Image (cartoon, rainbow, N blue to C red; front, side, top):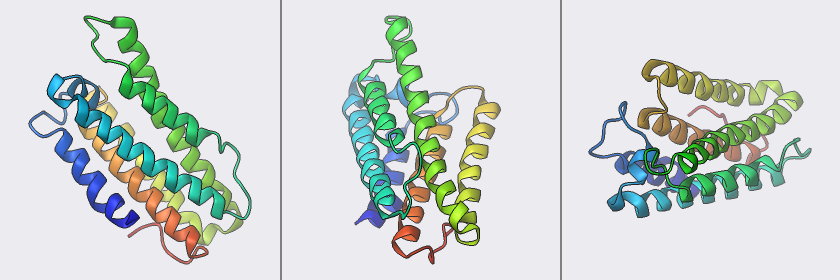
Length: 187
């Protein structure tokens, strides 16, 4: 079931959410505040948040030695919830829009930090088995930075890339941990 969610449902829903809008000219926050897309935005947040919570908490439980910063997983999801429930209407509610930006940005940063700490802990134990996960994580960071610099804003393209690659890396990491490190992170 997690494979279906990680490889089909979340990527498809994420891409369909922005259907009809420019990937490089708008973002989830703008789209999610349109009246006809509010429920879809909340559903996307619940789907992605529940997936990350379950998968990362399971990954941490499977680890022989727990990584530092395990609080980052629930913290990132609280911030995701705050971002989704705080309106992004900069002309009408500038302060709430500012908070929305901070919540969304910090949710993404904390999620990446939690993934990094989990991967790093396993990498230090077995570099040959977890090097590919570390490389994939660096690819997410580099690709996200590239899209941010290319467009100059947090665009839908960046959010789609970040969401899909983070979901897939989390899935591959969980499979790797369940297999005792024998499964690759790249597939």
